[in-house]
Length: 96
Image 1: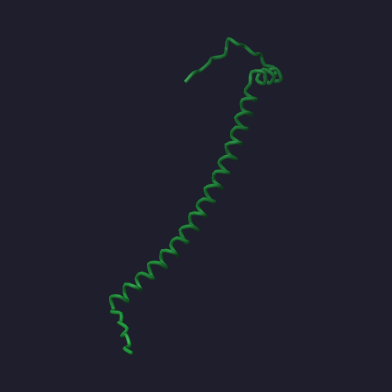
Image 2: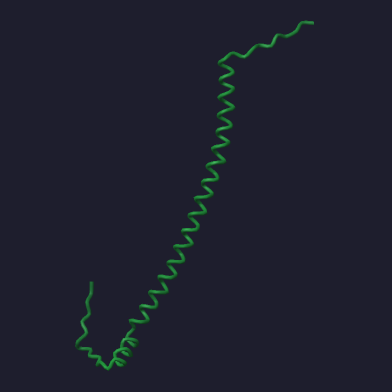
């Protein structure tokens, strides 16, 4: 029976195998790290969207309150309470 001789790996082959394993491990690590980072960014974006929506609702509420306070009936009531007269001839409308 003849024994088969095992061929020894050369330095170049060892280097190629080592580089391949290193590249595979590095790719897996990078994929996990980047995935976690993207998840954190998505959570931050969602929090900012929620804050933006909340602020928009507050702004709409304030605009409605301003419109209510500047309505003709409200101004007329305040003028009467202060004892002033409402004169349409003195009103000037300014347009942009």
